[in-house]
Amino acid sequence: MDCKASKGMSDNKQNIIEKLNIADSFTLAMDDEIRRDGLSGSLCGYALELDKTPDITILSQRIEEFSQQFPLATASLQQQGKHFYWCKRETTPQLFYQHHAPEDQSAQAFQKNTIDQLINHKQTRESTAPIEFHLLISPAKVTFFIRWIHPFCDARGADLILKYLCTADKQQRQLFGKPESKPLVNVQLDKYRWWQKIILLLKGKKYVASIDKLKSIQPYANEKAAQQHRHLIKRLSEAETSTIQQLARKHVGLTGTSLYYIGCLMRALEKMNPEHEGDAYCAPYAFNLRKQRAISPLTSNHVCALFAQAPREIVKDREQLFKHLKQQNMDVIRQKLDYAFLPLMWAGSWLSLQEYGKILRLSSSGQERSSFWFSDIGKLDLAKECFPGAEVSAIFHLCQVTSPPALAFLNCIFKGQLTLSYNFVDPLMTAEQIETLHALVVSELLEQSDSA
Amino acid sequence: MKKKLRDFIFQELIFVANPEQFGDEDDLLEAGLDSMGIMRLIMFIEEQYGITLPDTEIEPDNVQTFNALEQWIVRHQKG
Image 1: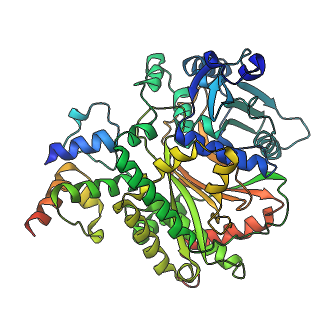
Image 2: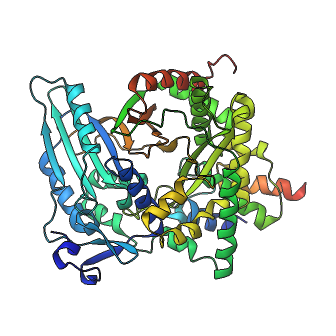
Image 3: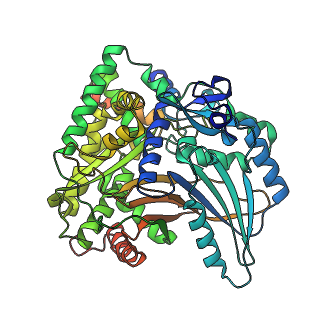
């Protein structure tokens, strides 16, 4: 039983572990929006394909130790007054599950079906475990799947949790919780005096207003009701990945690798659906406030948002598009707009989830602002044989998404291979459409398109 | 100059367990300096030293090590 239900009152302060920070509240508003769309909330996944069944004893011990070192892992998300908190539960939820394939199901189907069930599992926000670990075992394929609800941690945090589980030395594992500090979003916000925060807030509002001048293109049929999240994973060869990295360097330089993926997806969507109405493609993405290679903070969200937007006419011209996206990104950072969302996120955390969600999603004219969601997880550097008793052969990520835009595009590079994860909402999009889209994306990434 | 760069990079951009052991010729890109980090670093340099670093010169040769960064900045201070 959770703290609110057990005590029945909103001022049940003694069970509070931690208040959600402003970036957690941002992702919670998206959780609420996804739930309003009829889906399971802002659940995310991190799947590791293993070469064999791992050492389950060690794995379960480390998960147990993790839950003790980070009590948020077993908390319940509760509203008290205007704000949300992680609260202690009376009963600790189970965090580690094992799933065995039935004899009549192929390894591939078992993996896909189980992950689909886990990411689409509907539960109340209060009863959802912040994080769960699932081991999917079939004779031909073993997958370790981490599922978390976004307010609990961001993708970098999930990566750190994995590194925690892969760290053999107990003393080294303890370091993931140190040094304890305030959330990085608060640390950054505290650097500004009150009047600077107001200037930043106004800058942020102006930035969003400039984005809203162009109506975002919605690539898919949004009149259909969302039913479930689906995913399609595509892995490119090492040679293709190397070519793509060289092309990204050529077109967007050292400072905007992610923009290459965004631009290629925009062009692929435009080629697929040139008749869809709208003025521009618009993709929100987050940048992480953690230092690169830092092993803490592990839990909570430490991100700030940005937009990549390109008018349709520019999207049609490959060279102009990358020039535009790069210039836009540099202008945003030169004008310090990258931090402008911090005071906006603070202000938003005082609103109801419904009000905040609307502001985050809809432009001033009431249209959905995002054409798709995007996240570049980058190169993953898990050491060989670090997973307890097995080697990781491949990795992919998943996330739920609001509908519209009903499409989230996630990419990462592991062992020199680029993995593209298409997350889409059925029936607004179909697997066949995503296959078509993927062919166009690859052609763009490899610069094989006719208008290159 | 290098101390300012080191302080900024190790306090704001990348985590290194022992910053004092990180040499002036050690690879910052290998150590985790990413695209967003490079942008931040360029903004910091431009503000600190009152110079403009052209986008066309944002190349590994200029940002890979502390020595390379220093030489890049000095070239623009002179120019």
